[in-house]
Image (cartoon, rainbow, N blue to C red; front, side, top):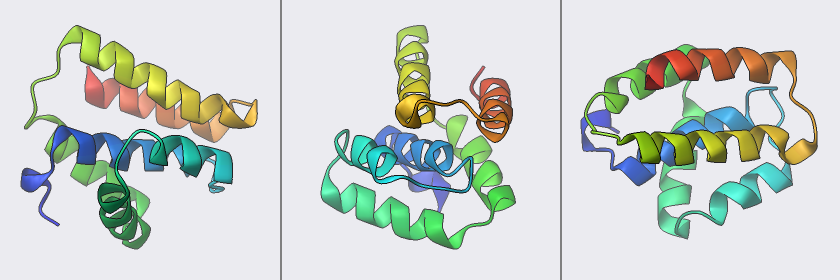
Length: 109
């Protein structure tokens, strides 16, 4: 999928999937939390794409798409909260999750 066509919701879903996969293990809690935020069709479409991408491809797509949308400070703060909800859904914040958090911080701001 061309990231120029991603909506904010699709981009958010893709990033949350990357957060869920940061430690290379997507738990059912993480996936269910993401699914609770969006409709099934959007989740299925973005999950299928995410599953085919390497980590480098994911970062490229996110970096490309993030600049196409104007995010307010409130939207960014809410988005960061949702990322942390995913990171902490398994009651830990691993080194790989911390590294991804720093990378995403640089991309978002």
